Length: 165
Image (cartoon, rainbow, N blue to C red; front, top):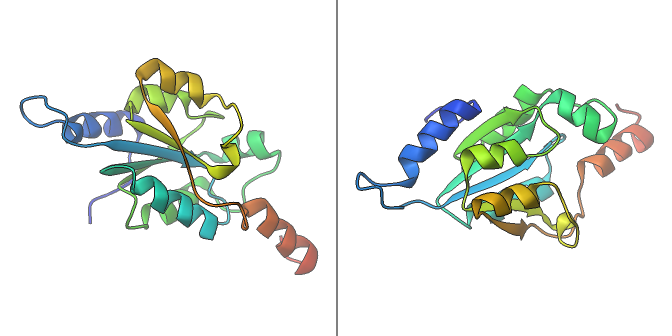
């Protein structure tokens, strides 16, 4: 198995090679998804499986611990390396990288995916990545089902009903 973990610089070069043939013709569709993926659950799996079905290569951006703290106002249950490792273990995922920003705008500009995929809960919302995607001609897609499972809900159940966390 190839190493799926990469930093953004390595990934950018690898994807440039993978997306075109020797004549520079586009041959692969690159899809990018991102998230915290703390307490991985079936909703995450559905999101990533659906995203994978949209193209040839799925790149997943995982929020750093500091980024999760800023976004969620709490530390993640699992460290970024563990969360990224779980995502990388999925057969549908080709590459994973950890990013420290609060959104994927810089990564979208660097990777230049054909599609940037957000979860269903962003369906009727505006989010920062929209502008970055438009800048590079990347299409935004929505994936996944209604959030019957969420990391926040699982965290609450474990803490309040089970006495964990």
